[in-house]
Length: 67
Image (cartoon, rainbow, N blue to C red):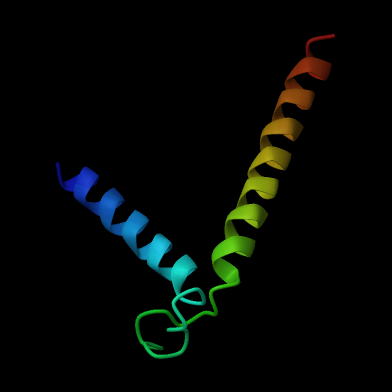
């Protein structure tokens, strides 16, 4: 149950971070959101690219090693 509460809290934080520019609130709470909201889009894209690269490299290694 604690894990679900932590996941929900992170989700709400991320959604609030994304909506700051739409609500014109960016920069009003610098202690709560230290990075600009554009990083809320760039960080997940970067992490997905790194993750796919690692998984693809691992699968390629396994497939080529088997031959």
